[in-house]
Figure: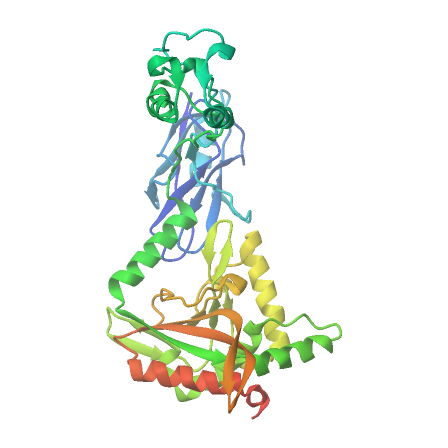
Length: 420
């Protein structure tokens, strides 16, 4: 029978290789034309490869997690019996079928021994000689109650002189468990788990390692009184009509964009190989978003041109697209500055990692209410720490501190957010 070699096709401009993130076939499978073969991940997207011929799979290129060069063999197929040499030749020149994978996590990591298997109590193999019926075992009421709570049969406990004491019970718990005895109060131990780092998780790992390896980070943290802006937000939400509910983020983004013109070094990208810093006029704001597949950063284009309601709509749209896997490569690239927030889990302070090749990342933290001096009186105020990490090759500490102080002024006097 003729054989057909399916080589990994050119799946994007400038793409030299792709990672196998899921196999849909294995050696020996009988497949039909257009049947999915594998999911391949590039820097830009995950693409599903489909077979141009029917037949039997006789060879595959590698395991999940392996990286295959463009043009290299991906799958070898023994073509169905009545196919001619001409048919195979035609398939070799046929444009390969590729489909962008839109599932939010189409290539969940392979796991080994993930099931939790409860282990029933095992009778020790070197069980001590029985001391007679349980009712003939002598022990104090305290020892009996402790043994009952632990699920221990006192008849199994060896005791000097036949009277079981706490020390005898301790010795049995120590050595009896080594022989296979497990007290009833001890839960079954979870099995170890081995997870291969592939796909999105590998991309995140590589990007974060490169960022920390190449960028000398420093983090500056300031406390901001958000009492006034939270009151304004509550008023806006109470009268929003059909508009989306506001969180703190749209208001913070407006403050970020209004301060950028005076601090252009914060909205920049650094090409360290060329030794060139590009200070961008438009703010293309990356929004770090947690998804089942890992951390993604969809981008709000021209954030400086949007009002708080438009920002709220775009934040919700991009977050949903990232989580359901429908975000395009354009929506996941090209940011000039990134904002990362853990919402109510924000913690006291964070030291976020810069989204390379950007030079700064901003992280609002949790809002807490504390007593504060306001003039000569003590009032309950809402406070939030704001973190910013910067690339010290491009941004000085003085610049970062002044930028955050400018943000602080706008946030603490929120009417300035809407002043021209």
